[in-house]
Image (cartoon, rainbow, N blue to C red; front, side):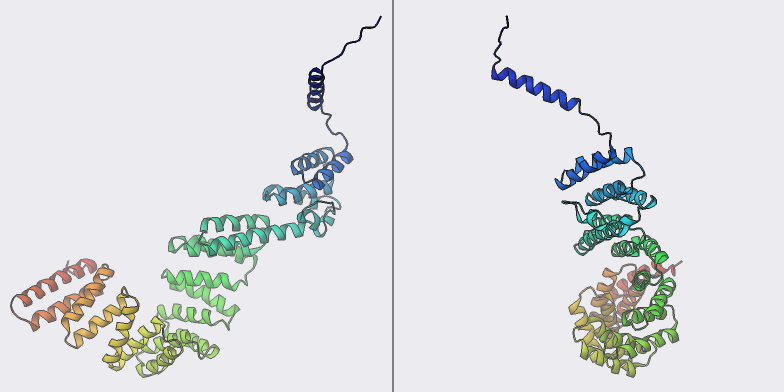
Length: 412
């Protein structure tokens, strides 16, 4: 006799759950390369990338010499921006027989990313552009560390693209003088790949010039100029580097080239006018700088240079007016304040000279010349006044002279 037993629904559910769990735990490992590849493509179509990776790794385990599996796995890692893994599998694909076919063409699987459809070259180029552009946006937004991180990743995606290294150099240039040598090392990496990168030479040269390394600056700016002789900005920078070293003939020749390229460029005219002033050809300087100011009336550097040229011709009123405008534009312009002080001394306005030079020594306390001139101003005032005013001015003159001596070692 048979006995019929009825199970409650709850108990059936429990038993089924036990079977399912037991089934999952006892899941059979894929043993066919073909099945693993087919499963991987199905998972890619469904955008279940973790499972796709698992199946591609299994396919490679079963058949290590299969280039398509390596390529597809590299493309998934490209999509995830896992650069080291991407490079590892792309290189393995290319090293295998028939693997180079994936360099220009990918795998046309439904649901696949652009990296998988495009091939190795496309994947690297696309990911490089993606990271490079992110770096540019970070740099423009002032996020320098983020910029470096993105550019470094770009360099890892494509180690032979000099643009990544040059961009990292530019970030370090933006970080200031203390980072200049680091910037130069990155620029040199870029130039080792492409020695015709004008911007790399120019950026290094300008950075070195701003740091007072004029001889090094001239070398790099000359290379940039040789590669791009019509670039007026490079001409101007090279001329300044040469002039700063006392190479007057070379600086003048370079400035004239800049003037030939851009005869109406106010910055070029200002450069040439400044050179004329330094050579004490004041009339030529005035003519050139007046033309420059006509072209760019608000340019503070042109106003300053023209004021110096007027000073050279003896036109103190015109010089004073422009130096005053320079100070109004920038109250901390110690050079304009110093020149005003010297003019006021010449015209007997000792109080005006002292006021200007006190500001100079406040702004530039380590500049010995400012203290020396301030001492002279107080001495002139002491000699032109009497009583307590004269005594106080003499005392101030001695104090300023003591600072000058301490800075220069003259008092020892």
